[in-house]
Image (cartoon, rainbow over all chains, first blue to last red; front, top):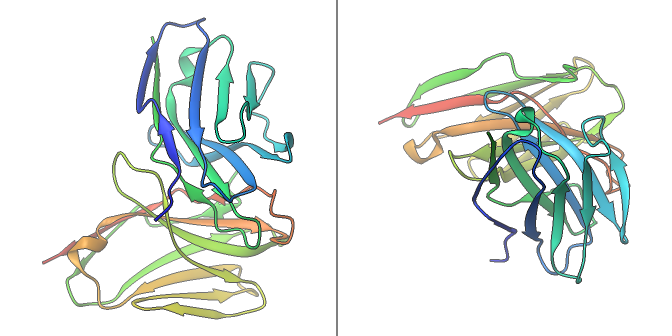
Length: 113
Length: 115
């Protein structure tokens, strides 16, 4: 069964460093998302991406964040200068487009020291 | 921001009995609702969904009920099995035809099914 994959599973970085989280969505899906879950808190929407551009973003998704679909299969989330409060599980999701049943990857645990 | 709320952080049921997980929402623009199941160290797994034009949707052991006037939905699992033990998230979306819309999640309910 097709699935969303994410790498790395765990990323440790120093505050102020740039990180890139990678996702490979399901191949025939058209819509892509990033969510995050800070430990003990809700899953929160960050950004949605369709047709090579951002379609929606939350207040969390400030200028430090960017997304890209560089090669038609990967979907990346970049954090330019990480802060301690960026420590969270980051989930990528994709959607085929007919309904709103988004399929999630296993997540990347980002730890900012 | 508490647009989607799951008031019970945990629920414990006996194997074979019914599990009922509840979810309330405040945003009347929501018209598509989903339940996800999550195991530790894994991403949320889609379980079942319901559109606001329906009041019930059933898939095997899982049934979701929607009460629009009360802005309340529930997930029934019957019979409950030990493998159902996980965290269950309710999520909502506005205008599913615009599939770019975000999901708004509740805080989750940890279900423990005892053998």
